[in-house]
Length: 334
Image (cartoon, rainbow, N blue to C red; front, top):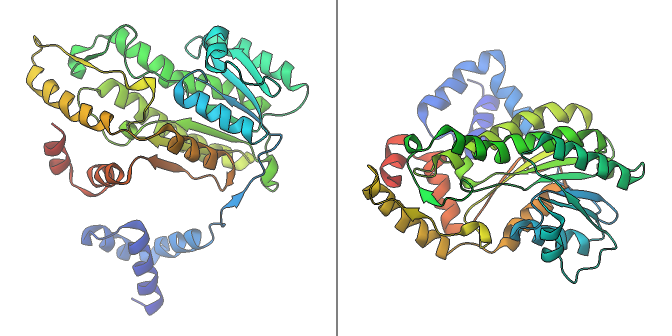
């Protein structure tokens, strides 16, 4: 192996965490067909991040009446953006933004689980734009449990209608909104101020399968995968895509769960409930997630993925889903 190839492998190992000899050997074996050279050149040519001017940009945020959504909207307004705040009912938005100037704030009723509602909202936004373009779509709307229930269950204990209601909002809702608003997005591969962006809010549960929150975790895994596919597709037309994966965050989303003492999994869910309570009691401030979303909107290239959590939990989660073998992470999580 040439000295140049050895240096390239060493750099790739440090940046891609290729400490496993088997994985490294696979790269070495593929040197003949240029895999290492291609990977190194692509990594080396990645452009440096650039900041995009915020003032005057039109941004649409779903789930805007919630804690995280409202915090983001307020930060966008401070930066001089025109904000389309979307939620189920206008009254929810009026309550969330009571006392806030409506000069650059437009309320849009939208039920992301209802295709007709999403399409009507898109028509409303188009009319309000008056021929201008959207700069960003932030898919923040989501649910953490089945409506009317906060019961912690095993996946086999959930019925199909419960899982459908979760996926209809978290997954299909994200896709519906993106598809309906995509024609209004600004697109450019050369002008960073005209390079629109789609930012999807997933969760650390979309990186690491969470027991007894399985259907939520599955829905967020779907959002992460969707974001990766969408990013690779829209790059060709000058639209950026980012995915933000928050850990536990101090918002109304963190309502306490209940445990069914009669469940076959009662012992396990009780133990898991105690672990989750410890983490939720020490949850991060929503401002940290807002910063990550702002970075995704106003940075080019857009950060592909941002795991947002307190440093200690970020380290634990990275070890569980990135470094440890499944056998170890399984033992630690059940």
